[in-house]
Image (cartoon, rainbow, N blue to C red; front, side):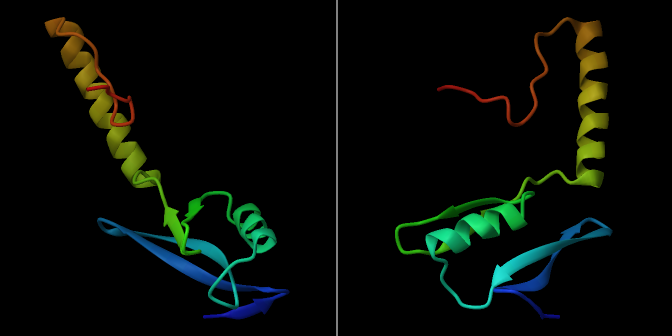
Length: 102
C-alpha cells in the first residue's frame, strides 16, 4: 500500500516475531537513491530505525532484534539468570549488547 506524502511515499514494514506481527510505518522516498537532504529527512521521519548509507549509495536499515514481545522475553530470562546467579555466586550476568573485548 503506497500513498504519496510530499516527496515521501508511505509503506509498512512487517516484522514477524514468533506468533506476533509488528507493523512499523516506513516513510521512503519515491526514487531509489537519496540525496543528502533526503537521507536526513528519512532518518528524522523514521526515528526508530538505525540507518547507514554505504559508499555505493545503498541504504542499510538495521533494527534491534528485541521488540515488545522479544524484549519482555529477554527481561524474563535475564531476571531468572540473575536470581540463579545470586544463589550460585557465579559472577556477573551480562546481556547480549554488553560488549566483549577479545
